[in-house]
Image (cartoon, rainbow, N blue to C red; front, side, top):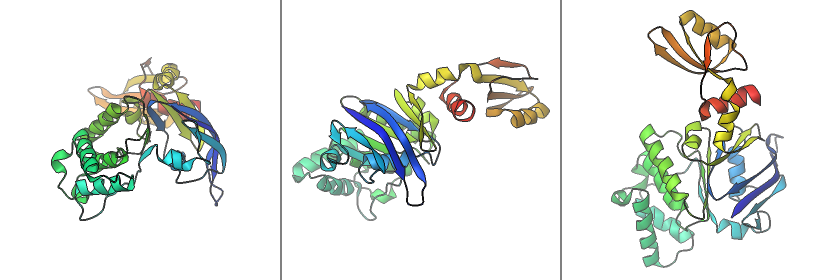
Length: 291
């Protein structure tokens, strides 16, 4: 199963070009869509889940044309939007029961079985009787995943799922997505948080100002940054100069002053050593230095 995106563009009535001739393919497994806020990620997600029609271009999903076969494509999809919310005064299992009815599961016994299986899978079975809108942020996101999976979709699309979560819930959520990516399913993770991609995805695309800036494995992007990633140890005065002259990734206090990671084509006037980049180094390097 594949998603083939070909020359996709989206121009809003105010002439804002959210997507500009974007082309790439998505195969089975966990796929990361990375980019800063305003890069066009959410617009692309809305197009893929048939909530929005593109200005031009084409999308094929498992052989179906997005424009001509919207009903068939919707039957394959599960979607967790960035602004997911539940209803007030409705229990967690009741919300999922409502979602199951919307998904066309009419048999009550079948619905209850499916709901219990999903609540167990996302770690919320003990919270099934709690009011859904009273759950923590992380638990609500897990309810969101459960409702997106209620019809056992071939394609699961999640938009900025870890924004606002604490580190423990973020890790739990990423592990949940990784577990669910096994088998014949595509999961698209759209985010501006680099750590979400580096921890989970085997393939990715990087959007910037509506254009496709990079498409490939995260390790390929990291490889491109190797010769541009440096580490320095400096005092307070030197740190201020470095911030003015270079792109600083991180600063860590040490006994002699500061340990500073930067990306640069060349370091002049400071003693610096090249270091192995991670995806965060590579992302900043590509966006600020190489793109």
